Length: 145
Image 1 (cartoon, one colour):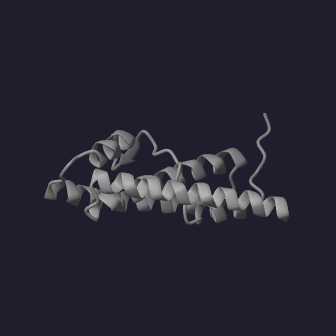
Image 2 (image 1 turned 30 degrees about the vertical axis):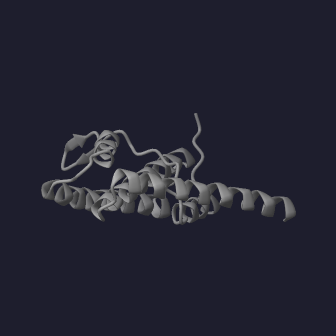
């Protein structure tokens, strides 16, 4: 099976999408993330933290540490897309992982800033409405353009 190498145009397109304002909306948080050789259930952990009524000081410190590790990994994924000689499939997998990590980062940053589930749900609904509105506008622009 022949794998097509990522073209410069496709590379630029993926990086542009990755730098988009709401790239993380709708992205799936990776089920597992490795930190220092240890596998953690990232999706489950983020979900549990989001649904907690109150966070302890230790949990908040852990969230800050996790955000740092996630940001490093997302940065590595982005660098690989930008510079590595990879196939389109590998690039798309890196893009999917990076956008999922950005989603986890955004969710965790909300928690670290004191967002509680009720506030979080309201912000998520507002963001989802903005995304739907943006999609409608993009479709309109495509039809007119």
